[in-house]
Length: 264
Image (cartoon, rainbow, N blue to C red; front, side, top):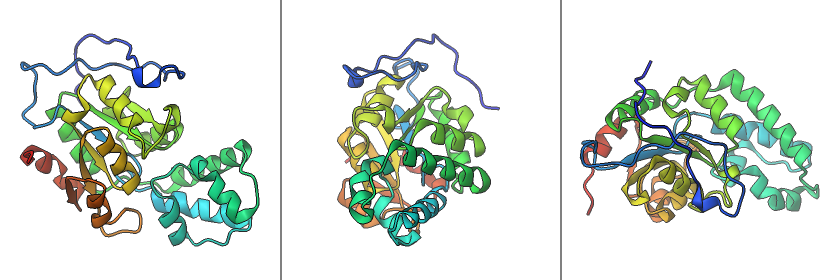
């Protein structure tokens, strides 16, 4: 078990959401002070989930490809990954309708999530090296880490629990579905930084897609692009083109990369 932080717990206010409906209450982390500033050159680290912490993209896109086929769009898993990775399916409803002639309803989206989650429950594993990297950064930053995902909250929480990561992020999980705008807009990263009590420009963001990296850069964070050789992730060049400051291939390297980082 990891060590929990001691200190005052307060309810976070999400100024970015006003006048929109706020998220469920979470624990707000105390702001960084000189006395508690970690040795890392960042005050917090914010992770994407899919493709960064959990190896979910192939599973999710296989289900999506099957369901699009049922609607009449004969699209391969590889093409589905190229088109949809980094994007919320609900945000791509117009594209799906253009290729199928079928209106995407809330009922269809609910069925997709149910079938997707059942497959993830059976098959999901964590990204190699992610658990050790998260544990090391949790300790180094006294708990100032968070997840900021474009996926719906039930999926994110289920995946973190299945891979042993939930205890490190409990109370600091943010979903683009609960924001005014999802990625590539910065809202989910700005909300995470606010709840952690840190300036977004003092955050490191870990992303694996062009869409997510664009959101992190727009938030003012330093983006570290995770780009192993896989269809499940954007290319190194694609991540650099949208502003990723560093691209790496091995999640086990992340704590050392962050510790050694020096701003230009």
